[in-house]
Image (cartoon, rainbow, N blue to C red; front, side, top):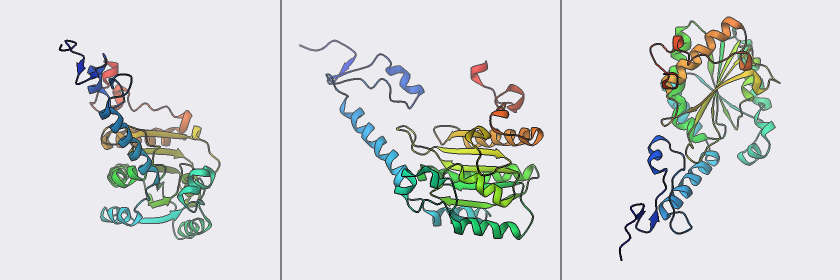
Amino acid sequence: MTDSNPRRKRGITENDWAGLKRFTPARIALGRAGISLPTRAHLEFQLCHAQARDAVHIPLNRDALTTELNDLGLTVIPLHSRAPDRPTYLQRPDLGRRLDADAGARLKRLASEGAAADVALVLADGLSSTAVQHHAAAMLARIVDALRADGLSLSPVCLVEQGRVAVGDEIGELLGARMLVLLVGERPGLSAPDSLGIYYTWNPRVGLTDAARNCISNIRPGGLSVDDATRRLAWLIRESRRLGCSGVALKDGSGEPDALDGHTNFLLE
C-alpha cells in the first residue's frame, strides 16, 4: 500500500510552515521522522553548532588582518586586553573590558606625540573571530571613507585581542577622542556565526554603560549590508555631533523616510 499523504516524503512528515523557510534562515518547519528530527535537520544543527563554537574559540589571525588593513592604507596598533588567553577571556568578562598595562602605556605615548583625533577607531575580536576576520576590513574601509568625507580626523586602527565592547572606552579616553567607533565580533548564533557589530560612543571614557552607546548589529552577507551599516553609522555620528550625545539619548532615525536617501522601508509602506 502506498502512502497518499503529500506531506510525507521518504518517511519524513513535512511541517505546515515549510513555505515560510524561504523568508528566514531560522530553524523552523524542520519536519519530523517519527517522533524525531529528520537526519538532514539533525546534521545541519550539528554543523551550525560547530561553526558557532569555532567562531568563539578559533584565534584571530592578527597578522593576516593587519596586512589586509595596511593594504587599505590604514595604520594598525596591536593591543591586548587584561585577559591573557581565551579561557580567561570567556570566564572573566571584566578583564576583556580593560587594556593591559603595556597597551595603556603605548596609547599614552601615542597621545603625547600629536593632536587628538576626532574619532578613535577600534577593532576587537570579541566573541566571533570569524566575523572580524571575514568582514572587518571591508567595513572599516567604508567607514573611513565616510568619516573622512565628513571632514573628521581618525586615529590609527587599534586592534585589540581578547577585547570586549567596553575596552573601546578606555582607548578613546587615552587618545582624547571626541567619538569612538568600535567594530567587534558578536556572540554567534546557530544561523549566524559571522555577525559583526558596530558600537558608537560620544565622549568615550572608562565606566560608561551600554546606555551610552549606539549599536548597529548583524552586519554580514545574510544580514545588514556594509552599505546600510555605513549609512546608519554616518547618520548617528552627524546627529551625535549636533546634539552632543549618544546611546539612549540619541534615537536612531536613519530609517526615517527623509534619512534614507531614496531607499524605502517596506514595513512603512
